Amino acid sequence: EIVMTQSPATLSVSPGERVTLSCRASQSVSSNLAWYQQRPGQAPRLLIYGASTRATGIPARFSGSGSGTDFTLTIRSLQSEDFALYYCQQYESWPSFGPGTKVEIK
Amino acid sequence: QVQLQESGPGLVRPSETLSLTCIVSGGPMKSYYWSWIRQSPGKGLEWIGYIYNSRSTDYRPSLKSRVSISADTSKNHFSLKLSSVTAVDTAVYYCARAGVSTSSRSLFDHWGQGTLVTVSS
Image 1 (tube, one colour):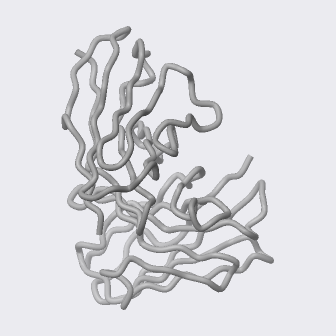
Image 2 (tube, rainbow over the protein chains, first blue to last red):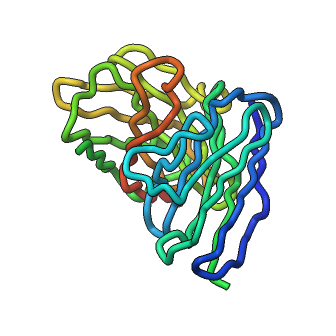
């Protein structure tokens, strides 16, 4: 199983700031990497797939990059609705998720 | 707009079988991959398995001996059975839709709201 790790576990930021979340795979997943956002009490929502392609309806302030084993999700100018949990997931093989990064209000 | 809704008992006794159903509305089931995913504080998000075209299935290796996923596309639903449950199977269970190709079979673009299943006597 491909093991996904994410850092940091928690990010404390102010609205309007830019944040960068990291995700690492235990082996190469090529560009088969997705990012999800999960708000309290809700299901995960697909944000990014193919490492860098925004899903339908996702604002342009969300961007993804990387390939192989190292990936980043950048949120430009955080809005109030962006404070949430973020997970990366590889779909190169049997799917596996990272443990998540919590973006909280500073 | 595709919507998924899980249903089933919220409490299951240890050693019994957990059974959940996911009703799909707003779009066809045919040609898509349909998965069950669970989330618990201890294990995070964990893929359980998928079904494709009502016949083809694949399961998480560690759960394979206890899991069965079936589908009835005429009724637009698919189901999960997990046998011999223990407390570690306590989780929020989600059903989710993935893509239509093998390369996107595990890319989940639509999710149900999730249902909490507690395993306890």
